[in-house]
Image (cartoon, rainbow, N blue to C red; front, side, top):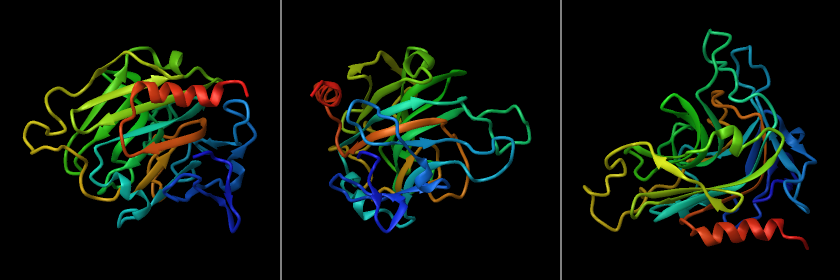
Length: 272
């Protein structure tokens, strides 16, 4: 989904140009969140997300998403899905990770930076089925793919080896993709169409592939929504804010192969 298609009835909402028809809310910033900054030649306006008042305990961070406590029927393709893919363009524009506005320590920072993901079927607005983000791994912030096959189960994380500042340098548009195969427990990360070296964080069998019958798929529930640039798209809490810009997000109900990720990147960046 490109992020330059305002709802004619409400410019603070973003129309979906994909198949699902999932309208996004531009939370706390409305139409001011759309900025003229092309991720690649011919791209639509980008979406600016960021924390507004980091020194104040509040709930006014700019983020985007969709939420329904009963599950979103427009995201039904992710019900019992065999996997997922999350991809899009990201550009770090400020100081990350953000100051933690939920603690009394004025120098405390969040341990994660939210990029984009699909929520689980029982999510509180934070828990996900498939997510691209940066999170602390063994005391070091890492770019990760984080997925949860079962709503009631544990997540698995695949972390990129390279330092996150090299993968997402400030002021530079980068195309990222994460794939999740719920059938065999594999995850992958890509940057500018190329696979990234990485490692699995959680040992054992967090997706319960060995103890549940095949075929292995996601829980038979509709995701409760999408989150972009932070958590809690129902806007009840500020958490893991990202000072960054986002464009051309794509959420798929299947894990695409490496060749498809490369082709998508090349399609957008090749000269007309």
